[in-house]
Image (cartoon, rainbow, N blue to C red):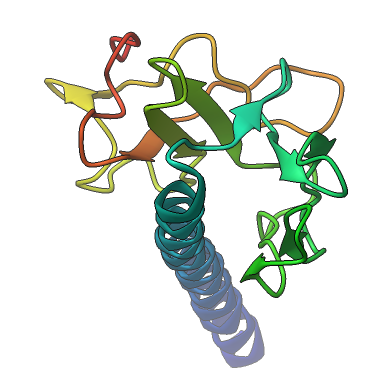
Amino acid sequence: MELLIVMAILGILITVGLASYKSVQAKSRDSRRKNDLRQISSALEAYYNDKSKYPNDDAAGAIVGCGTSDGQTCSCGAAMLDKNSVMYMPELPCDPASGRKYFYDVGGGNGSYQLYARIENTEDNDVPHSGTTALSFPTTNCSSGGGAVNCNYGVASTNTTPENGRTPQ
Protein backbone atom coordinates (compact mmCIF):
# COMPACT_ATOMS: atom_id res chain seq x y z
CA MET A 1 0.00 0.00 0.00
CA GLU A 2 2.79 2.40 0.91
CA LEU A 3 4.48 1.65 -2.41
CA LEU A 4 1.31 2.60 -4.30
CA ILE A 5 1.05 5.90 -2.42
CA VAL A 6 4.70 6.72 -3.20
CA MET A 7 4.17 5.85 -6.88
CA ALA A 8 1.06 8.06 -7.03
CA ILE A 9 2.92 10.99 -5.46
CA LEU A 10 5.83 10.52 -7.90
CA GLY A 11 3.38 10.44 -10.81
CA ILE A 12 1.81 13.72 -9.72
CA LEU A 13 5.22 15.38 -9.26
CA ILE A 14 6.41 14.22 -12.69
CA THR A 15 3.22 15.50 -14.34
CA VAL A 16 3.57 18.92 -12.68
CA GLY A 17 7.28 19.05 -13.55
CA LEU A 18 6.67 18.24 -17.23
CA ALA A 19 3.96 20.90 -17.53
CA SER A 20 6.28 23.51 -16.00
CA TYR A 21 9.11 22.43 -18.30
CA LYS A 22 6.94 22.79 -21.42
CA SER A 23 5.77 26.23 -20.29
CA VAL A 24 9.35 27.38 -19.74
CA GLN A 25 10.34 26.08 -23.19
CA ALA A 26 7.47 27.96 -24.88
CA LYS A 27 8.36 31.19 -23.06
CA SER A 28 11.99 30.75 -24.09
CA ARG A 29 10.98 30.37 -27.76
CA ASP A 30 8.74 33.45 -27.43
CA SER A 31 11.63 35.46 -26.01
CA ARG A 32 13.79 34.37 -28.93
CA ARG A 33 11.05 35.38 -31.39
CA LYS A 34 10.85 38.87 -29.92
CA ASN A 35 14.63 39.21 -30.03
CA ASP A 36 14.73 37.93 -33.63
CA LEU A 37 12.16 40.53 -34.72
CA ARG A 38 14.20 43.30 -33.04
CA GLN A 39 17.33 42.14 -34.89
CA ILE A 40 15.51 41.90 -38.23
CA SER A 41 14.04 45.35 -37.57
CA SER A 42 17.56 46.77 -37.07
CA ALA A 43 18.67 45.20 -40.37
CA LEU A 44 15.63 46.66 -42.14
CA GLU A 45 16.43 50.12 -40.76
CA ALA A 46 20.02 49.81 -42.03
CA TYR A 47 18.64 48.77 -45.44
CA TYR A 48 16.35 51.81 -45.41
CA ASN A 49 19.26 54.12 -44.52
CA ASP A 50 21.21 52.84 -47.54
CA LYS A 51 18.38 52.70 -50.10
CA SER A 52 15.74 55.15 -48.80
CA LYS A 53 13.16 52.37 -48.88
CA TYR A 54 12.46 49.07 -47.14
CA PRO A 55 12.86 45.84 -49.10
CA ASN A 56 9.85 44.45 -50.93
CA ASP A 57 7.77 41.54 -49.68
CA ASP A 58 6.25 38.62 -51.49
CA ALA A 59 2.72 37.25 -51.14
CA ALA A 60 3.96 34.68 -48.59
CA GLY A 61 5.36 37.32 -46.21
CA ALA A 62 9.05 36.92 -47.05
CA ILE A 63 11.58 39.75 -47.41
CA VAL A 64 12.52 40.33 -51.06
CA GLY A 65 15.68 42.44 -51.16
CA CYS A 66 18.61 40.07 -51.49
CA GLY A 67 20.76 38.80 -54.32
CA THR A 68 22.27 40.30 -57.43
CA SER A 69 19.26 42.45 -58.28
CA ASP A 70 17.87 43.02 -54.77
CA GLY A 71 14.93 41.01 -56.13
CA GLN A 72 15.55 37.62 -54.55
CA THR A 73 13.86 36.30 -51.43
CA CYS A 74 15.99 36.58 -48.32
CA SER A 75 15.88 33.08 -46.84
CA CYS A 76 15.93 32.42 -43.13
CA GLY A 77 19.20 30.85 -42.09
CA ALA A 78 21.07 32.63 -44.90
CA ALA A 79 22.87 35.96 -44.98
CA MET A 80 20.84 39.05 -45.84
CA LEU A 81 23.00 40.49 -48.65
CA ASP A 82 22.02 43.05 -51.27
CA LYS A 83 23.23 43.36 -54.87
CA ASN A 84 26.34 45.27 -53.73
CA SER A 85 27.22 42.49 -51.24
CA VAL A 86 26.34 44.75 -48.33
CA MET A 87 25.54 42.44 -45.42
CA TYR A 88 22.59 43.54 -43.33
CA MET A 89 22.50 40.33 -41.29
CA PRO A 90 25.01 37.47 -41.30
CA GLU A 91 22.10 35.06 -40.79
CA LEU A 92 18.42 35.95 -41.11
CA PRO A 93 16.76 34.23 -38.11
CA CYS A 94 14.20 31.47 -38.50
CA ASP A 95 11.32 30.89 -36.11
CA PRO A 96 12.56 28.47 -33.41
CA ALA A 97 9.59 26.11 -33.87
CA SER A 98 9.32 23.88 -36.91
CA GLY A 99 6.34 24.69 -39.10
CA ARG A 100 6.43 28.39 -38.20
CA LYS A 101 7.88 31.49 -39.86
CA TYR A 102 8.04 35.24 -39.47
CA PHE A 103 5.77 37.32 -41.69
CA TYR A 104 6.96 40.58 -43.31
CA ASP A 105 4.75 43.19 -44.96
CA VAL A 106 5.99 46.39 -46.57
CA GLY A 107 3.62 49.27 -47.14
CA GLY A 108 3.33 52.89 -48.06
CA GLY A 109 5.45 52.75 -51.22
CA ASN A 110 8.14 50.89 -49.25
CA GLY A 111 8.16 53.66 -46.65
CA SER A 112 7.00 51.47 -43.76
CA TYR A 113 6.89 47.83 -42.73
CA GLN A 114 5.29 45.45 -40.26
CA LEU A 115 6.99 42.27 -39.06
CA TYR A 116 5.00 39.53 -37.32
CA ALA A 117 5.46 36.30 -35.35
CA ARG A 118 3.21 33.77 -33.62
CA ILE A 119 3.75 33.86 -29.84
CA GLU A 120 2.93 30.56 -28.12
CA ASN A 121 2.03 32.08 -24.74
CA THR A 122 -1.23 33.84 -25.56
CA GLU A 123 -1.25 35.34 -22.04
CA ASP A 124 1.86 37.38 -22.97
CA ASN A 125 1.28 41.12 -22.41
CA ASP A 126 2.61 41.88 -25.92
CA VAL A 127 -0.16 39.83 -27.57
CA PRO A 128 -3.21 42.03 -28.31
CA HIS A 129 -6.27 41.14 -26.24
CA SER A 130 -9.93 42.01 -26.18
CA GLY A 131 -10.79 41.47 -22.55
CA THR A 132 -9.34 38.05 -21.83
CA THR A 133 -9.42 36.83 -25.44
CA ALA A 134 -6.09 36.81 -27.30
CA LEU A 135 -6.33 38.36 -30.77
CA SER A 136 -4.29 37.85 -33.94
CA PHE A 137 -3.60 39.83 -37.09
CA PRO A 138 -5.76 38.83 -40.08
CA THR A 139 -4.15 38.36 -43.49
CA THR A 140 -0.88 37.30 -41.87
CA ASN A 141 0.36 33.72 -41.97
CA CYS A 142 3.03 32.56 -39.54
CA SER A 143 2.79 28.94 -40.70
CA SER A 144 5.48 27.59 -43.00
CA GLY A 145 3.45 24.42 -43.51
CA GLY A 146 0.32 23.94 -45.55
CA GLY A 147 -2.13 25.58 -43.16
CA ALA A 148 -2.71 29.18 -42.26
CA VAL A 149 -1.95 30.42 -38.74
CA ASN A 150 -2.48 34.13 -38.09
CA CYS A 151 0.37 35.93 -36.33
CA ASN A 152 -0.36 37.46 -32.92
CA TYR A 153 2.72 39.64 -32.22
CA GLY A 154 4.21 42.39 -34.33
CA VAL A 155 6.79 45.13 -34.59
CA ALA A 156 6.87 47.90 -37.15
CA SER A 157 8.91 50.74 -38.57
CA THR A 158 8.86 53.87 -36.44
CA ASN A 159 6.35 55.60 -38.71
CA THR A 160 3.64 52.94 -38.36
CA THR A 161 2.32 50.25 -36.00
CA PRO A 162 1.76 46.50 -36.38
CA GLU A 163 -1.96 47.27 -36.37
CA ASN A 164 -1.69 49.70 -39.31
CA GLY A 165 -4.13 48.26 -41.83
CA ARG A 166 -4.66 45.14 -39.72
CA THR A 167 -6.99 45.40 -36.76
CA PRO A 168 -6.29 42.48 -34.41
CA GLN A 169 -9.25 40.08 -34.35
